[in-house]
Length: 437
Image (tube, rainbow, N blue to C red; front, side, top):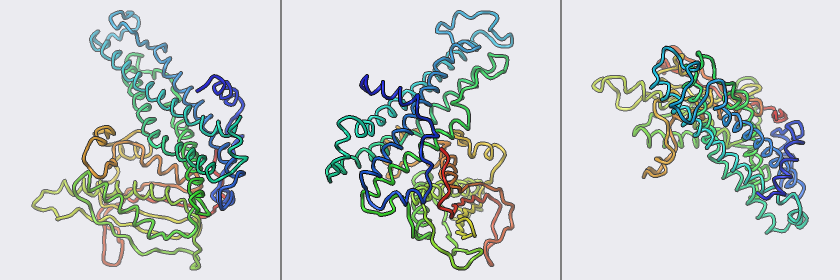
């Protein structure tokens, strides 16, 4: 990044805040225009630029906090052989103390590296809209020729693609920062080492919420440029088709990871309230993501319970997963009903906490890329799937929740389910609902 760009970015960061950004709704995206124009292109570029700037400010603040962690009340000395007696816990051996300090330093460096990678990513992608909106780049918008439209579409595509793994990178940073806190707490009289905003759930959620909107705005422009008049919004999506596509993807992931996959039964659509149902706008990519996440979790839970049964007594395939689509008065509800192990207290606490998974093994992205599997998506262990799915639904007034279920629940006249978990995702019909910034 050039010095002039850094100076502008610094000035921009000091003046922009979330209240300056547009409050988007599904209807607002649809009304933006049914094709790409210089006006809506400028609007979306400015929105993405502003949001990237705010994200960059958050990342720098988190990095500075983690970077100064060694200066907190519990030191992380470079030379672990020199330890002041007043800082040394009586109940801990010198060897354990030194080991803990060394491990904490290692985890801190991992967290810092992830945050620096994210900062570099945001700085680089920040420059893409910046160069079009300032200086000579303005000529591209003034002369909105086909080549110029293609160039700008490439900018949105680059931002969307290059931020594709940013959630996993942030998760790695959070996990390492949590590890530092857990390692050092016994060294500080069992008091938290410091109140890192990186470990604050509300702070993380705000960052991810904004990241979702950036990705949505990029997707919306790219899809408009392909000729779809409503962009990323589907006005007349076939609900059964949306569910079937997502279930198929979830089954491939499950089969690739576990070598077996339960059958999934999609029940006929139920309509509660008015019989005259009118199709509502839908962000298909977000709905797809959430259904895949809930379906693969349900499949995994069913298999986990099925494998606990002795092989001589076990059915040939794990029990079925059932999916119900319900049209309520105000919401579209999609329920994924499993017959698995259910949610114990630990699973319930970790279900929606970002970068917190009940899985014993963490997914190794590099190892997956080097494998010969056709499907490299993880079945679990990242700790980001459910939190991100719920955030997607909540952006425009929906929700996602999990409920434990006792056995004996009747799914139809002839089918009674074993105990398990019911996951419900709700999509708000009101397309004027405005997202928070």
